[in-house]
Length: 115
Length: 113
Image 1 (cartoon, one colour):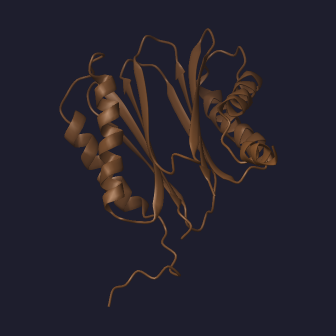
Image 2 (cartoon, helix red, strand yellow):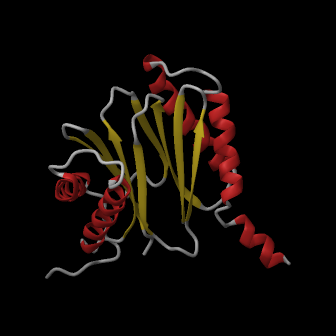
């Protein structure tokens, strides 16, 4: 019998989230070159799409999805993040993707909802 | 009157957080130019300092702080975030900062416990 018991601790699965995000990125900017006109639509689509897929998993989490797209032009880019949360239940995953003309970095943060 | 006070103490106040982030950026990076070797220390210091100041506020929140530093060299950078949370209690604040040599974007997300 598969019943969801509220006493069970559900923890974040970063590999699953990572796969969901990779598919979203490929679907939206898979074979295209960096375009200043379209980049804001792309970042918005990537975060919305990823969020929708994650929420569909039906797990008791709040999510934050962050996406940065940068043109490849030799500039240096550094990102860092720090989190103050419950390390037993909450988690994050970061996906780095690139093609010929741009880099894309997507971070997913999942914070457990107290039931 | 007591209700208003306690509501303020448990809400995500954007100006307060924004102030904390700006102080942290000025303190860690200030007017330095982009140096490949030091940038990773800067991003770590900025997020750690912000987090330490935020937790000192003593509010019932979990926090996520992210920091992006980019050299000024003509490249385009676009960043977006989407959040699935409780819109009545949770909030975020993004600070865009720059000096002569680099851009910095810091985002703070606060989720009520």
